[in-house]
Length: 521
Image (cartoon, rainbow, N blue to C red; front, side):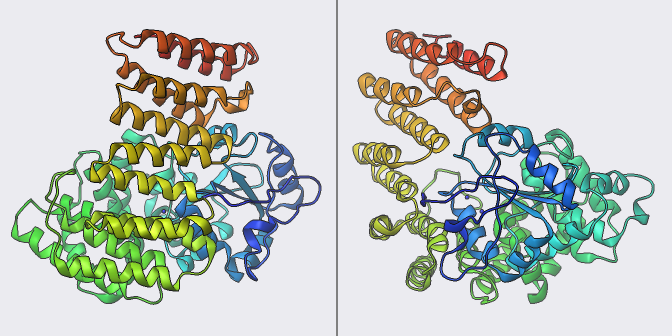
């Protein structure tokens, strides 16, 4: 799970106010969302301590499809609204004042990230966004009922007393958002080893939790090109899961998001094992695509996973022949999504994904038509424009790709979002029109020109976006052929840096990026 809506954000005071635009679509249940004043969350945790309530933090962006899916599938549920009375619900939009500094403080990167804290601000757990809504509520309930943090449970699970860990704690570990850990439990280099050990130590009484940890360990090892300690065990378990409709449904998110990686890790290319696993996985994904207990997004995701599976042995950029039956399936499911999805957040999540799916099977015109029809009614049409830019690039239409990319930047809203979209446009220019130095300079200067000389600007996603843009400009002027442009951009950024507090970390970050601009220029 990954659009701009005129959202009413909350100011935190002694009383929380309604996050009206986010929760009052139709007759959605009310959640008393609050937001920090700038980058200060202490008043929120002070109230949490006073009321002895945990803090549920949602970090997202109004444009991102997974965020909108969470709003449509989870936050709109009466049972989530009822549980929200047990905690302080904090909404942090990535474009709000201080949001990126808070992102750095809480070690969050991807949208959406959801964390449950104790009143004393220690993390209880990070909740995965890819599970279905009912499982999401279950994971939330586990955390709300727990007296131990997931970090404390992990220490026991990895030690000599692992057999004494409660089944509920094992489930919390199994359903922890490992992909969004950001080194809060373990460092990146220790993740595979940790998951391998958890899979070995897991209590067999909870086969679902153990299966999840086993598969997660294999996926992590495959991603990191490391050794999975229980590969043969995982292969046996995978065959069992794929032969059982109940287990397929129980593990749907693993199969949907990581099916291709699991099969790649558990079988050799062109081997009988791989052929059998691909066939079984494809059948399982077809079953999930027809499962009415799943959301439309999850059912569409099953088809996306099936398409990815069809490319398992193909190079990333290779064009492969797609079976006519799969193309017809994609076309039919996209038409169903377009016809049946009416809730605005759901459409923001579904339509760009559906359009991307069409383009993946070569239906570029149909993808464009779907997107263009959606632009007038989308929450944030500038997100959809990125898919239109990608389609134009696939056709070889460089000018069209640049024009859509530029338009998406010009129509984007919010300081962090505009910085990200603007730097993306600069990247497209460098890739597709490196000879157009005037257009590149104008775009990069435009991004820098919107930077506010506020310390809160130079954190988290913003700092990474600027760093990436500076490196791309370095590469563009690798031999000094655009030295004058780089010097002007560096000077422009230095003016912003000079206005930041001298001893603040933001000034150091800004100066480092400014220095990078002129390293090779």
